[in-house]
Length: 437
Image: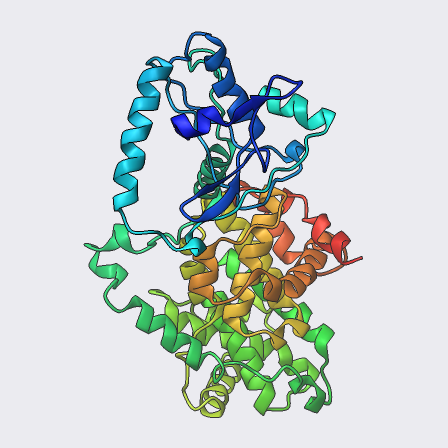
């Protein structure tokens, strides 16, 4: 604040060397409003009155700290004005400014905030001394930590953020991949899989056979399928035909193996380029059935199923979901081993084929990598979340743990050879079962 001759004549010094005006001791009117000035600023001016050299052009950048006891208030920010000329020149300029300001209209009092003169304690006096201006060359630049922290958080989010992969982009020019309508195909498969599944409780209406007999039959057919070197699609369709037929037709115990052989014969005619001969099935059954019996059962089964052979099995979804999982050969072989273990178990009929395929792949990933892993890409293409698959996956781990024990070891022996990458030798994902306990 500039000091006029009138103000200069009314200034006195107290015992501490501070300059105060008469009457109100530091109170003066400005623009019609009574304000109080800060002692520290007047003390700075007093140093110039005594004859000291003026400060260089310095601006105090430090804000008020919490130790001042007034943090959080909306206080005006003040800066020290540069003093580069003598005191007489400043007085002359201040008189000229006051004459110009008198010509301007008065400003409403509401636009000014009153800063009361708060008595300084010993601590506050020390803090006030710290607030004295220092040359800019000696000031320390404050490091902005918040911006760096925010930038670090953004970078970490970029690192761990997972994008959905376009699994069909590489096959855009492959006509066999059917990229243009592959999504529509699998959407239709998801709708039709419900109509191609057998009831999970159909065994209750069978009188002479049970769940255990069914498991023994399918375990044996897996070995026959491997011996004939048939396609994977043939095995999944064979199991589907057996369950759908047994759901609608009661079968005696000694005819159950015949049902399995005929179901495989029909699946081979549907999927294979060269189907096995009827004589081969007679030999594989150790001549338990004649050629006539096989052909008669084939006729009965086709009529019972109404010649409906085109159903989406778990194999169809396995190929699509493995592509979404960006799998390698090891993951693919282990996934198929686990889903074939599910084919043997009657209780897994309660899950639709798409769900069973997704659970098998999720379990295989957990088995190989030792952690629960289900990417956004897999979740998008399967439409199943990790929480939905967890219960089924724990059941699959249980089948994997006992795959080499008991009588039903066909799947384990099949995947113990080099052709299937010794997938059966992988340790089961025990941690998935332990988390449940």
